[in-house]
Image 1 (cartoon, rainbow, N blue to C red):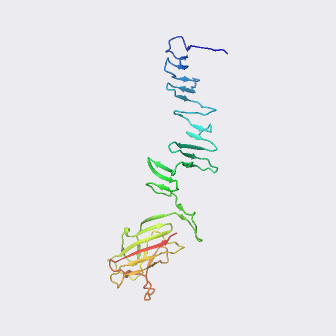
Image 2: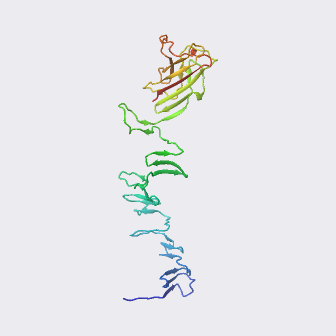
Image 3: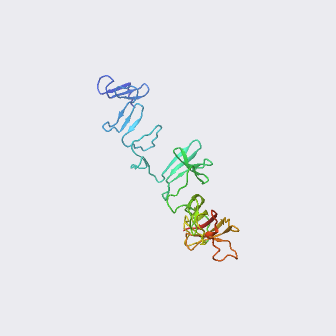
Length: 328
């Protein structure tokens, strides 16, 4: 076996001082190989491989910049910062985004060394699902998934399956959609298990055969699904002459169902000039938008007197009513 011992090798572009470009110096003092450019002596300044294209460059801080592809048959271990001005592909040499993972089990794992909890961004599915696995090894007792926007938590899914919304509402943006209760047991006549509407507001009743005064805040409604709940208050206008015609109210916020007439409720009429007040039920006229008030049943009531009439009200006396019905 032969041994080549070299105490010092210097290669320069010319025989001038070390301040000229391109200098290679090998020293055996510490077994180091020092490559200097422009006469620098503090370490690696710049290396250009294939300097026409400069595929790799090292600076004085020992940072490497690659302008071409990096190919390795082993592991690529990075202990510092890895930067790229292009696209990074894992499992593909044709990435279509900044980071592209192509695999039969496409997952990203995030491990918390403080709790030993492991989380995954998981696209490993035979049917195209995409999800988040929170603490998939059950290292903690009550992990949760949450979403923050501008530093504030908006949505949280607890380990118990609760969906919690902070400082916001659950809004369905498409009409006809809502909360589906199809997981529950059904009655034999079940036709729908979708709660698709909730609404509340005020309404202005319109009277026929009766002149009244009212205020929008005195008449309110709530609609839950197809059920409509109404409350109202009207008073007789003292300037209007009373009439013996039947009192009819229209202007319902929603029409009654044309298939199922279900309007029912109660009322109280404050009648100062009569011997007593009227408390009775509520029926409907032969349309989907009218209310007719009936007195409580009595042997003395005939067909013509069982309905509340305009002259049952004294001046400025009023009536309160509450009713429910089904709309289409």
